[in-house]
Image: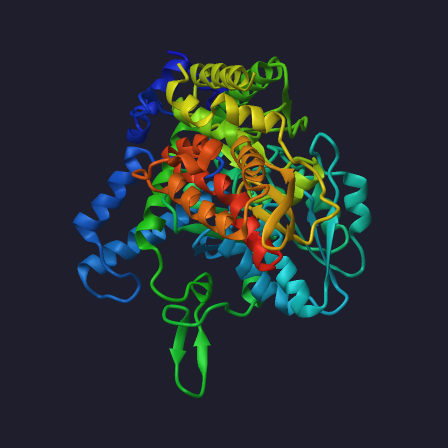
Length: 417
Length: 148
Ligand SMILES: Cc1ncc(COP(=O)(O)O)c(C=O)c1O
């Protein structure tokens, strides 16, 4: 018997076919054509295991958590807290106290802005982001800056869509109170050198929040190795349902932060004179949470870990390279986002055809792509395009689907002559 | 292969997309408004020269998809010389044409009828009506509109 090293295995086409069978939604036709789902950066589809876990909860042991002495409540509480531990191990946090369940990436960023941000940022202080951020990693900081009279500084990106390191470093100064930067750009596919950015910021004592909305489903993330101070992501882009997300924060930072929302579960004792808050992470989890969402997220984490993030990343890289080559071979296609380190996203424009028309025509051929600004209008402005068409991949996509995309783009060109 | 897509992307529409009529600034304009469709980045400015209740001249500028550009181009062609009352009536008819699948085109719509295909594509109706909503804003003097 021989053993192959897990870390280096990739997915074979046969293995991918097997995994596709785990996703019931993929077995359908759209306008008479097999569905080719290439909008994974917007949200991912759900494997049967996740769907089953939700049904099992509601048919078997559903109850409110943390407050019942009865049997069902204990089972639900246990499953909910197990999910937290799974997430902790998934991103290699030191402790499950550092895993705060939130509604999604957006809520996680707002939580940090409204607690940590409000406490640390004052008039004339600065927050540094990059020019490739999603609106959800821009607007909460703008709101904070407006409230505090602080200044938002934007690190520029080059024509490939890579962050300009020297310019970034120059923005870090005495007044910089936080850096907030995306790990993997949803509009460009750029993988930012976040470990390096964090190192540069930490050298000046500046904490760093990483927006991991796209990254967690495409690469192994180790928050201790990165040494980031906050890491946020959404479950729905990681094969789990909408309504659940994760804020990771270093325990010492979370402890020093005041709570965000008040309510049940986040308190130890309440009287009208004085309320004592709960310990981490419950201090930040006011009210009945998305119990099913958290449990389903735990199952989704099990699911991707069973495949292996290294295997997923390896397979998706090959697929992206294949698609990049095929698309650039089409006359008139221009890729927006050509960073040297990229994952899963192909944003492009086509000479003489608006992305919206590409989207409509591809849709009639069963191919789901996104056309628009991808909640990153400053990126569109940077590249001087009103919008792009975007194909974004998951491990369940295949070369045959890339071929279908290429053929459909050629038909768009024929139609527009 | 293209049969139903061709209902939307007809030759006339593609022609008006590639060679929009009445395109550019109108110096003599006494009404103008800007319209946006933030979802897809479409943006259009409508310029009108209205005298004695008649559209003496009309032009547009902007960047958008085939449907919104062709719609603006066809609209400007259709409205030149019309009275404001006729403009209002055409707006009503056009709106019904692209949203109500039982609406008949009727001869008064002329070339505009070609946009009827858009009603099979509900997410694209906003593209076809952007220029018209912007026109209304210009006539009412309300400056900018967005469709979302
Ligand atoms: C890079 C990035 N950040 C943040 C978000 C926001 O995620 P959500 O809408 O799930 O809160 C997204 C989702 O599109 C994203 O791609």
